Image 1: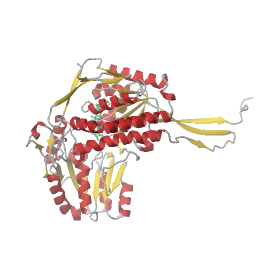
Image 2: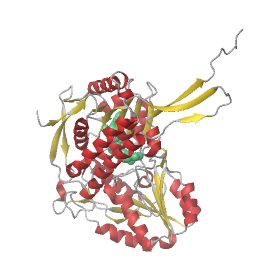
Image 3: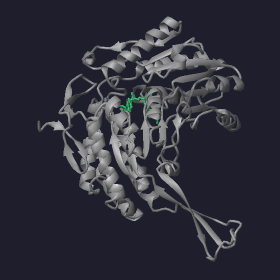
Image 4: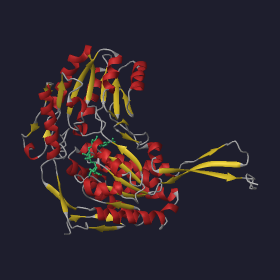
Length: 491
Ligand code: NAD
């Protein structure tokens, strides 16, 4: 029993009310690396009750911004002190190469520091209204109990993106990691306990989406739900949240375009096209999964791109030579492989990859060779649907207008990039792109300082930056009568 990883509810490490457990698998080799307690809807209710009490009764609402900042700075320092351990834990739980998890851990600490800084900055406004006796102002207040649900592709970083702004703004939190990758969250909550957050302010619930996640989304005492994950799940969370019309933020899927014009710096565009789709095994919401190439460089670009994709070293994330790790799970690998079959059946031409890697011991894990399809049409499922794996589809254009039309021909609107040395053209294209996160001569890098989120079916609201902070606040208007005297409206 003592080896079972527990949940953190109301300042206590506890087993699930059902006694059920779940095993956690290392996707690099299929080995079981941990057993975690499997939470229930009742456990969520316990967590929510604690978060509600901490917010409304125990005084977290009255903790000053400076004190909240102190908690977050202390937590960031603890993350930095334990960076090596956290990075390795994330490799084993998620599979991504160590160089990526090292970056994720550093960014996680930076996110907590960024929001520690934001907590104490000015947030209100005052207004000069058409009544000389009235002083009107706006203050931002915490929303209350925030339910937060994240996916498995950036387990630790997504925890920071959710909890840092929520806590900086003075909310209490009920957090649920993906059931596939709960380990870094458990470690993070141990560090939060050491940091000394008061009982009930931060709560960790482990378990499945359909039970634990659904209870967080539907619970009438949760004031806000913030979710990152698939668009389909986002829809069901939105429906579940209607009971008390809770405040909602959704960060969902994408099928993001990466447009390369003939005048782009060739090697830079090649490099980012690879980084855009194969970084984190293509399991990135903002992945540049649709490469939109100008016809005059189409053949030359694809020849070099294919050559480079074939050279990518795929292997265990713990192997320092690995540039790409395994898919998150066997089930997800099968899903990606089935999309590759769909692409072939739809008539697309496979340029490279298209299969599972099993040689040199890789058969125990869930590895897929980097895959590129050309000769695709807009109606193909591999062009329209998010595959969330190392599968790139290449589309061709001749004019600027055509590039924009192809880029926007999607139900998603998360991200997009354009490569060209013509600055005016780049900005013209970006301004027409219906997407929330964009790059010129780059793809994928993002910063705690700038807002993250999508247009269309890629989500609602923004994370990060001051926009992300505001998502965790209510806006209160205060009107002060500077010259109190009867209004005299009624005789
Ligand atoms: P998912 O939607 O299956 O699961 C995400 C989380 O939601 C998990 O914690 C899961 O347990 C929970 N969940 C599942 N069903 C639920 C339900 N009915 N009610 C409440 N919670 C539920 O997504 P995933 O497979 O873990 O992650 C991949 C998806 O996440 C991709 O679509 C990707 O684009 C998206 N994503 C988006 C962003 C972004 O910022 N926009 C970032 C990362 C990942």
